[in-house]
Length: 283
Image (cartoon, rainbow, N blue to C red; front, side):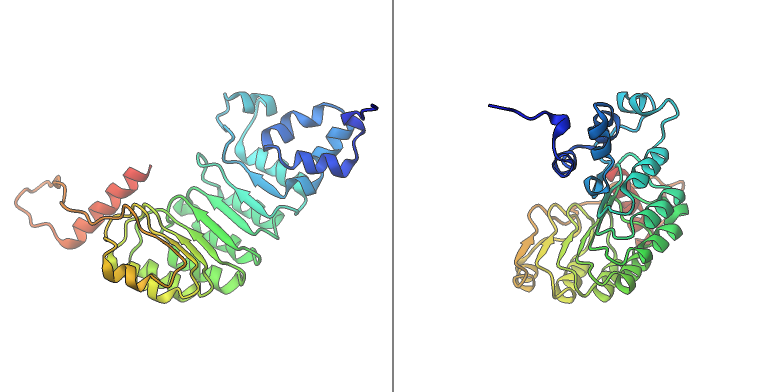
């Protein structure tokens, strides 16, 4: 039986196969096998999904050493986006890296048709550029963030104004009254919302359940600040998948370290303290 050789395989077949590989193999291994593999690995159709989450961007890592002695995430991002030539629909930043202003600007320019975006967090100094990038991603459908940005109300407002196909949001952090109101008021077509492990009160839960009437799935597993009692479950009974297992109310407060032990602690200080503790726990 005559068997074909890998290097003689049709180009579209090679592109299809290589599109299933990780970016490490696609950039640092496959291109160096033969001429046809080099050509196929650089086809934009094979770079529709850019997932950087499982790559080690430490300069001393084996992956970094394979790429370049002057390795950096920003440099690697620029290389991959140049090869993708605007074909990428899915972009996942690594959890160990907060994209810089330059990274966000480049991504918004080079991925005009982006549908799914995942990132760990945005630094405060990069939030303005993030809002500008969101406004350019008209086809954005899903956003996942491991840490809630301080500009969440402004962020969902930009999504509501510019991303008509948006339907999925995942956040981690502390969700307050203003955040819940912004989600309800700006994302009327939201079909799934993942706030598992977040800190939010019963009032915010009810506001979301009552206001986001297009939800098909709501994930509130292991949240702190509310308990899914009979009323909460009844109000959310219309949602096809309503996950709330493990959510609980904080039973007791921890001791506060005060410079003046006799000073009375205000409710605002207590809430700020819990927000800080929760942020530390997330990281």
